Amino acid sequence: MPESSVAKVLNVPRGVPTARYYPPQTVEVPPNSEVPLFGKDDKPENKLQQIFNANVRVFNLSVEQDLKDYTEVWQKITFGLGTISESVVNFHNGTYIALLRWSEFSLKIPDTKKV
Image 1: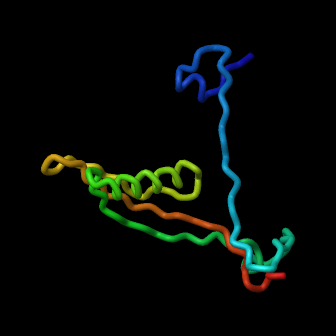
Image 2 (image 1 turned 60 degrees about the horizontal axis):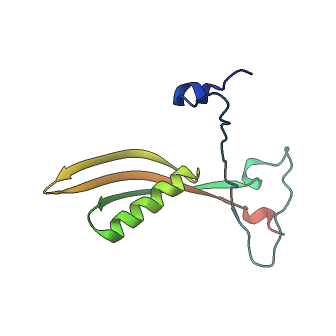
């Protein structure tokens, strides 16, 4: 049985299965509504819309709330709900300071397709 490229890169021992988890994407559904069907011939403005929200923040990792928020952002990115634009961590005056630029995205049903 051929090894996957991931197994070769990670040096996973032979016989250990590799698995990838892709969390389901969520869609904002209006109250008392259903998700409409989208046709392949629909206009782009009538299809499911991907909404991006850009963020930038400096985290002081010695502050408990900042560390918690930083971890939550990384978890969203790990789940595939965002992407990193820039990440810089520096040690300054006895603490780690992190600059993080990222975008989170969600899916939205366009107003024209609401049921």
